[in-house]
Amino acid sequence: MDILTRRLGLSEYLPVFEKMQEFNSERGESTQDEFWILQHPPVYTNGLAGKPEHLPLNHEIPVVKADRGGQVTYHGPGQLVLYLLLDLKRRKMGVRALVSKMEDSVIELLSKYDVQAESKREAPGVYVKDAKICSLGLRVKRGCCYHGLSLNVDMDLSPFSFINPCGYRGLEVTMTKNLGIERTVEELGEELVPILKEKL
Image 1 (cartoon, rainbow, N blue to C red):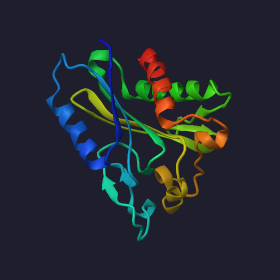
Image 2 (cartoon, rainbow, N blue to C red):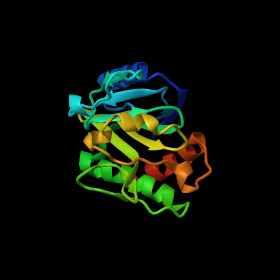
Image 3 (cartoon, one colour):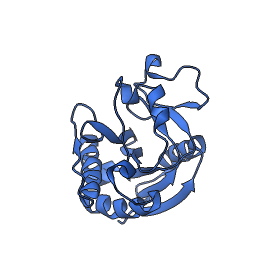
């Protein structure tokens, strides 16, 4: 069964988060899997493992508690967000395998532009010379997953400096524009989707 791709443009985080939960709770055995490609206005999201000491102090950007794994991260315009709404049970796939496929897809995408990236088993995501360029976070319920990945493309990175990204103090972050990749969020989204679909 092919994966349906929806392009949601710039969308507020909380309504999309609630729609993911609703989609997952209402889906049945024959429900088609979906990818949602979008960007979010500025927002910090804190995962289930999130700790208060990693959050910003007195910052004007809102903080939303999410039900994904992991800790705090930042979303903003110029960042490619790809949500995966997949029936893992039907695909006979575990979470670790899915995370690896997500990481490998981003690494393959960057390699097309001669950028060497890597994943780290102890800290999920994709890194270029120890600077994080892509964050991952998933929630699995009833054998199905939602949430996904965020790839920094061409954005204001300064909000990351007010938090401990993914729980790591002083973690450097980067974006594709800083690596010489002159592609928009939309263009990279259209390139990433078929790579990930093929791996799934």
